[in-house]
Length: 197
Image 1 (cartoon, rainbow, N blue to C red):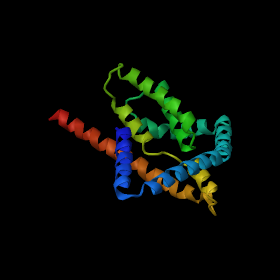
Image 2 (image 1 turned 90 degrees about the vertical axis):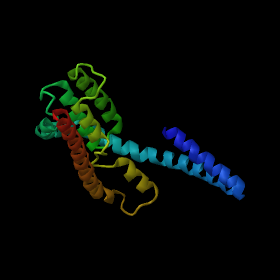
Image 3 (image 1 turned 135 degrees about the vertical axis):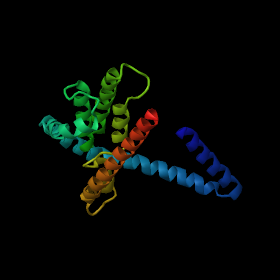
């Protein structure tokens, strides 16, 4: 669906430029944007490698494991269907901790494993369980403490203080996470009420 939207936007813009007589400007914008994108991607490599290395050290030092233990009592209440010692809970906590540190590459396989374990708890049903919906809502709420990619882009464009975004990111993460949980609980309890009536 998203691809169709992109195609529609591109085709509409090109057709409009053809009739408006601005095809030269469109071509110039295409080549300039492509060149800038390549330069930005190359410039981001060193910064991202540095931050991901720092995060990997934190992971190996046991910081992620410590965070997982710290958040365990909270996640028992968020995912009441999952037994505390079930592997699914471990994968959920690890995924959440990895996301907090911006380790997207490490968080994705943990999230997939968590979903697989939750599907087993749900008797391999094709319908998502309450826990699976909650987990998806949490993952899409952009849980991040240190936005390494944004910091790297700000450094690339010579920001005076690239890390000043950390505070607002934590605030945004708190609001989006609480919002996601509220929406998740609202629709869950509404469904429960419908089933009772």
